Amino acid sequence: MGTVIRFIKKLNFYNISKGLKYLRHFGVKEFFIRLSDRVEPEEVPYGPWYEKHRASGEELKRQRERKWKDPVLISIAVPLYRTPPAFLEQMIGSVKAQSYPHWELCLANGSPEDEALAAALLQYESDPKIRVLTLPENLGIAGNTNAAIEMAKGGYIGLLDHDDLLAPDALYEVADAIARAEGANDSAPELLYTDEDKVESDLSRHFQPNLKPDFSPDLLRSNNYICHFLVFSRALYKRVGGFDSRYDGAQDHDFILRCTEAANGICHIPRILYHWRVSSKSTADNPTSKEYAYEAGVRAVAAHLERCGLKGEVTRKKDFGCYRVKYEVTGEPLVSIIIPNKDEKETLKTCLTSVFEKTTWKNFEIIIVENNSETKEIFDYYKEIDGRNGVHVVYWDKEFNYSAINNFGIRHASGEYILCMNNDMEVISPDWMTELLGHCMRPGTGIAGARLYYPDDTIQHAGIVIGIGGVSGVAGNILVGLKRGHTGYMHRESLQQDLSAVTAACMMIRREAYDAVGGFEEKLAVAFNDVDFCLRVREAGYLVVYDPYAELYHYESKTRGAEDTDEKARRFQSELEYMRTRWIRILKEGDPYYNRNLSLTKWNYSLRSS
Image 1 (cartoon, rainbow, N blue to C red):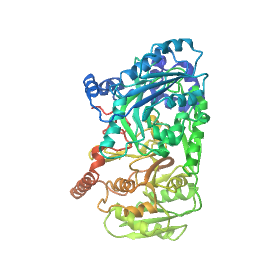
Image 2: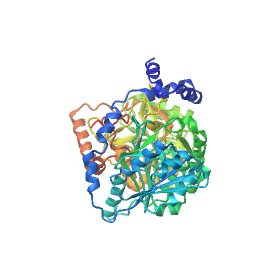
Image 3: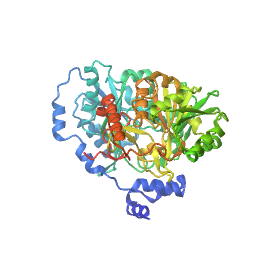
Image 4: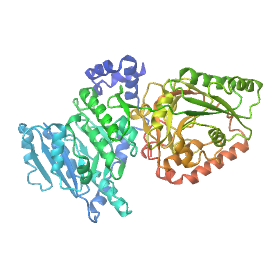
């Protein structure tokens, strides 16, 4: 009822016509789930946060006074089409207000019949930094954009929609990122993107900040999260070609995918530097207005996979602009499932029964690593299952050490792919193993992790963020407690994406990657061993992928015991210190897959309060 009341109060922001379209699209249940996500109050209100974190007058003054050595010229390309004169003036005003002076503005007008627009453009004829090209006809969004880009003289080109706005420090931050890379004797990034938000049509309110991760190829296949503000080198543009009209509606997604395939260096600037104006006809405010764009997005992602030599089926998700890639599994590779166990016959039995009865992938073996059980019933159960249906029981007779136990079990495994699994898991989705295998078979992917629920159908694991979390501040699960069916901030809970770490409660590993890093670190007996392992696999050049379509229940560490002795407390502190020392750089610089503007004390992608 509370959700309905808040909905009624906000009808002026969420018109009835659009609501009915959403209702038809999602159905009643999912409509109200998404509605509740939309109208729930922000923990840290964005309006005041934005005002606090935008560049101050003093900062902008310092930026304008900076002396640049060999400054790069940034060309802003804008395709115009029936642009309202007021919007045009505000857009151009935001460019002229830039604290970085080395820019030019290239306007390609695709609506020559629009007399009001033509009249509005006349006032800029005398400005040497603004050039206008009136096209003989509308060439479509891709063609008009290409025309604007072809006017550009700069070494870098930025894209700006005709009714949107740049923050006054946008070009400064881009130029500074390029200069810092060159100053460190690194190659300058060829592709740069920033964070963004939305702004009401009358500019009265900023809302819905999109605080992005660093480059995540799997997230980009799932959703065009990069979007605005996009800047690329002229050389990159020449290599990949311009915008392709075959993907009109998703032309930017297609272009960005092609750029990321070819770019020498991709840089994310974690600042809100672009303001996307909403209107009733824009996808920003009314996603149902451009159904054709989402079909074009499917084709764009499919074409990208083909260029990358990846075989997969791309489909639309219910959430607008979001896609699922189901990667093809070739051959019949053996998967070795490693399950540590101590006592807990019924827990283990539930786990095994769900694996055998619900899993569609059949070529697997299960290695149970027995660790100092005490009950007769578990050993009787071992006798029932050992040697049958690909189940093998091996015996670890030393003290509990999760890393050592898994390494021991893996030494007995024959599979090309290893699946570490807790004994307190229960399979939900029948193709869970195939999903994980599809990722791990891809070149360059080392680990794939699953979406795990508590028994009450709330999220237990949707990936791990480095630096987040209560006492340790080393790492923690994200979106814990989110209700099943809700997709979280920017739908992240429901999208395939690359992360720094996933939990070993259900983690598939390419054996090649496991061997490359020497397995789990046995100094980490209980805590952080999966995080450390994932970070070392990433350090070796592999991706770690979270796949929400592999779903299981997790009954959470039933066999480990509580951390309730002085010895266990000392061990935890030792492991904590190991992580803080070994991974000091990422802890200081921040998780690349988690925006620095987001909270490290909350689990729900809320804004950092300071």
